[in-house]
Image (cartoon, rainbow, N blue to C red; front, side):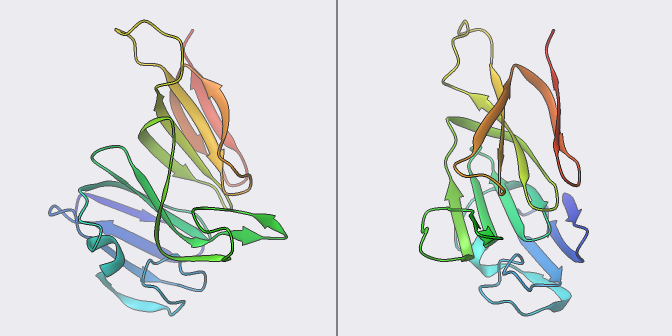
Length: 172
């Protein structure tokens, strides 16, 4: 196993050395990536991610959604797209659920992602920033409870999610 992630609502994802993603636990919001809301009591490969034929490097699970990041810095999410009347619009805003992985576009490569209860905090190598070409500019985006993803900070070294908020450390 390369990476294991679990969330507070009892679902777990694993990435193997061969970049396969496995999941188990509570699946009530399609967050296991299995294209249904069934619970899984034993880890099993997530076919919908395997079908993308991507080299998965990171995975993150919030209460109602799960995201994977590939070696190219692209991010794909599954799970609940709306709650309490606030849209979490991915590519298809007409549906509440994302039972299959849907790509979320950022202006650069995703470096890391962390989860709160209802949101994701994403650190991105920001290609829109005005910086010398020898420097990599970074930005933090938050989504899940807001859409589209909102840039909330730049020149960030480290970003993380708490249960209800985002935390980040900026360069001096």
